[in-house]
Length: 226
Ligand SMILES: CC(C)(COP(=O)(O)OP(=O)(O)OC[C@H]1O[C@@H](n2cnc3c(N)ncnc32)[C@H](O)[C@@H]1OP(=O)(O)O)[C@@H](O)C(=O)NCCC(=O)NCCS
Image (cartoon, helix red, strand yellow):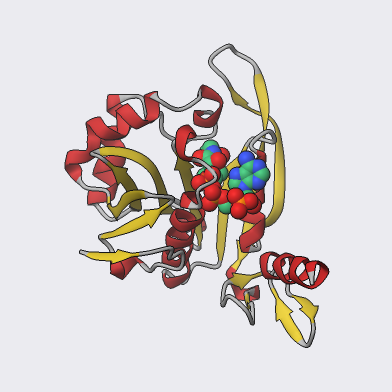
């Protein structure tokens, strides 16, 4: 197994590997059929509002069983992050199941509430994004509720834009209805940041370079600080 220090741009074929982040040792690997209980245990530790938009209930044995079955059949690709035998995050990519949505892939990502803002979401999302691009899909989507601001930000950094807002589309356990935001990335329009090499929808010029939003902000800060 390869050990990487502060690496973020990891590719699927490098898995499994150990990611050293903030003094923690996190294993990144593909989901396998024996992970059912670990997934349920992960789901049951997450806030209910973060489980709302999930297509499958990851606290349910039946839904997790379907997920493992779809993974085995190659319909979904899932990467998990594991620490001390516990799942602490995952990302997945799933192609549209209908004949007329085969060109669309949906990305999902979730990081344990106790290990957020360490960069793990960015790494997991990067893996799923790269897998979707290599599948040659035309459109990648992500779904979230409006109060999932972290999710919106992290997808925007990759170049996703809002595609639609489906009003009163998600029902929580208490019967309340919530809006659902669909974000999209059109792969035909992808451009590459001159600094980090990330695929994005829009580039911002700075000092003769075409930069993604993240690198633009970083360079702007550096120039401002200097
Ligand atoms: C979205 C999610 C996966 C982010 O995971 P994470 O490990 O905390 O993300 P990272 O640490 O890699 O964050 C990368 C960047 O995204 C942005 N970001 C992430 N969470 C944020 C938040 N809550 N508020 C504002 N910005 C945020 C920041 O710019 C961050 O970089 P920084 O920490 O250097 O400022 C996590 O919050 C989560 O699991 N949410 C619930 C599930 C969900 O909403 N999934 C998305 C729908 S598919």
